[in-house]
Image 1: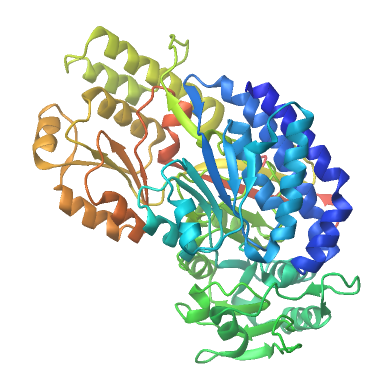
Image 2: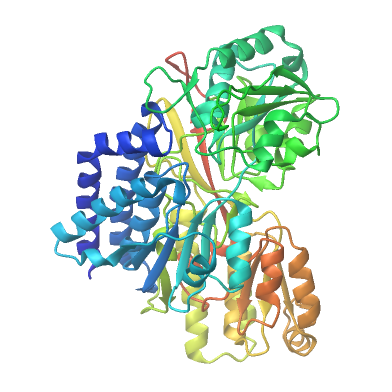
Length: 608
């Protein structure tokens, strides 16, 4: 169906969700053990997903390349956000034009049924087939494996643990998966922080929904004198002790219980200290089932210790003490994950220093690090916190993942090409390209420049709020993009990716098997000579890397990528820079509080 039809159907679904708000709150309270204050904004997020992805559907027609939707997408949401996350996955796939099978977490099947009912009603109201959305109940056993790895499934959306994503990929190494996974998130508090605001944001980020959020702050890193401040310590302990654990349906509850008894990791986090650690607030088990615990704070967590690098997913916060901001950032970045992170400081130089170095997909300044809002703070991480291409949910590139892209009609553009790219194009003129291929490379360079000026090379703040900056920006990849050139790769495609590497200035490494590498070197390309077996071993040692394959993917590469949480991007090479520059860059959402107690102030270089 046309994009406009799909968009209107999603807007009708948004109305259905809004009309059923009370029903969703009731079911989530009893089934997911969520309080009203946690579920109400989640329903608003679900509505936002539908309206935002409706607009994303319309924008699919604005690209230079041509889009063909996937036929079937499987959505596998978690139990902790049983309304917003399944809604977002279903809405994104439908926006692209794909049918959907949703496999909900077994703990929240009634919430999933309500979500599916809303979608089917919205589709039917707009004259679309409600059977485009199908609900399936299964676990990760044989039936789940058959579904995830089925040949007719084009893509899988996962929000859940990194281990679950690795399991899915082990079933089918070439699986096309878009996954938001685990996080070990830290909030840095420096001596320049406002104590009242810092502690308020910390305890809400750590213990909202009992810490059962992949974005939760399970670590706080005090810098220098902040770690010695009795005021900060006392305020934190007092704030945590005021929390009232209880069931989600009790309106007096301020910290709901767990959805199920603690996992092995969470139980260790709640009951077992590591060397040199001590309890500031010791968690207590409050019911026989183990689903209700009081919150806990463990002090003196050491860098590299078990609690520093393991996600527990529950109501326990660890305190680390760094001597300098540089050391604090190093610890914040060294968990292996890169989902959310924050800093509390009124020192603009510290903010600038942190923003330039923090390795997270969602960065927060002087505010809490949970509660991302669609478009305003599109959600998704780096490193072990993501699997797949890396487009952030609720962001400008998410819906465009759910289909294939092919070359569209090309025309010249009146745009200034950068000097390094222009020099590269002139050098390519010596390689004997046909007139058609030469023109194609020039169009690619022009489209790269347009994409850089309009999207990748600038910061975006679509909300335009006065009190809060919400910047969406692109950053260079942390480790070099591995451009792997197959024996059957076309010279034109290799040249096109060389243009993209020059325009983005991201770290890139080109490699090929010895014979192909020698051929390309003779033409002036810088290409490492690496055998297929050696390259597969290299990929297995990457740390959440990206491989951009040109031509056929060699044996063993997909399997190696599973081992290292890396992704192999083997789609056709396109002239459209809006698509082809994406693998060279990381997406980041930066949210900054621009006021203090209601007084607007200039913060760092944001909006300078």
